[in-house]
Amino acid sequence: MKKLVSIFLAAILSATLFSGCSSAGTGGTSSKDGGEINLFIWTEYMPQSVLDKFNSETGIKVNITTFSSLADMYSKVKSSPSGTYDVVDAAGYYISMMSKENLIGKLDKSKLTNLKNMDSAYLKLNKDFDPENEYAVPYQAVAAALCYNKSMYPKGLKTYEDLFKTDFKDSLVLLNDPRAIIGTVNLMLGYDFNETDQAKLEKTKAKLMELKPNVKVLDSDSPKSELISGECGAGLIYTGEIALAQKENPDIEAVFPEEGEYFGMDCLCVTKGSNNKDKAEKFLNFIMRDDIGKMISSSFPYISPNSAAVKLMGKDYIDDPVRNVPTSVISKGKSPLDIGKTVDTYNDMWTDFTK
Image (cartoon, rainbow, N blue to C red; front, side):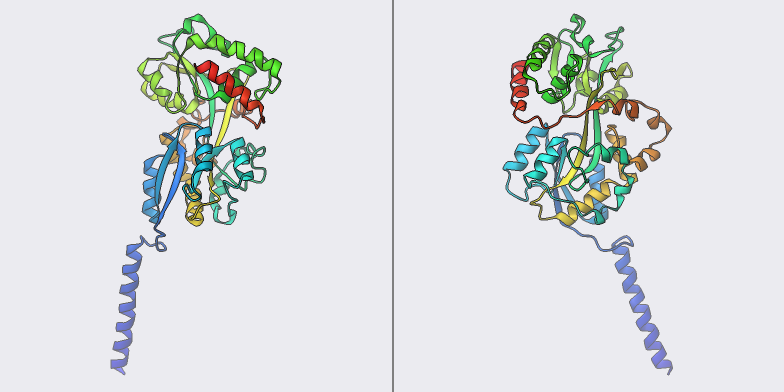
């Protein structure tokens, strides 16, 4: 009998030790997935620390490729072999176009449990492009604001019209985005941000060309660099870039004109041709965690749609109108819509402006 008991205890001890070794190898969680996914996103928009943490927790490596415009993203996703990218950063009417063209697929919401962290107001902002929130989850939002270096220009800027003053000759940095800049000029003239009337667009073009002598740099990737260096003293760029510039130079000020502003919601989507849909959706759910949202906003202070993450950011962040843009400003935001063949007019206008 003692022998049987000894054998039984030995068996239990052996099983316990084996189980302990298994748990230690996975950090007390389920076994890691392993493998890789390919992410296609804007430059300087995803912290490497976030990718490293995801890899540490899941064993999944994220290979990152960047683009400098949504048009560039769209053309590359469309022309690349199926499965080249797993997760892509898309926004606005590009989401609706890509879903119709089967470039991105529907998401399995049962795997996106952290969607609850997303502010419902931001989910509603995508209603024109993804009515049921089936194809995309919010990542970060962007708003364009006026900015200036008060040590260089003490009088500052108050309206879009101020950008045209001769004081700013060869001194402005603007977003390298035709829909954002032309749309803003449309607003100045009292037109719709997505104006399609050709007679009105002729007047928009004439006004746009008046701005040309004041423009020194067109940059959507890292316009903060020109402000920090002093190469440019004012401009119209993303609030996130203004916030990063303010860290280096407290003389940088931001202004939200009364007419409203360009607003865009960057979202993460899974490509239709992805061979790693489960891993890609696991990444999307990871990104929507509150602690991860905080890591993202701490590195790249654009507008966070993650209300749970915003609470973790603290009072300084919450009270900062540049990093945490007020809803009163966002409510005036204007997003590019699908304007059909009129987009050719915008592109031609931009070509003439940038010659």
